[in-house]
Length: 71
Image 1 (cartoon, rainbow, N blue to C red):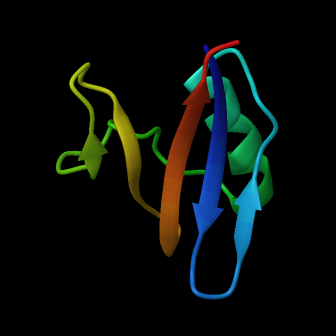
Image 2: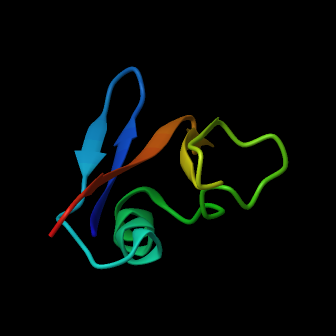
């Protein structure tokens, strides 16, 4: 699997390249928008799938999401 992190708010949108882990993609995004807790690390985090992985949650005044694709 490959993972890409995205950030959107009312005036900005950023995305990373594809990486081997969701954490690596989030690390690259943090360099652009500032530090934040990994998705799923905060109680009450957003959108979960059946594998107990959080794919979107509010961070830094916007929404951080993780996209995945098969490599």
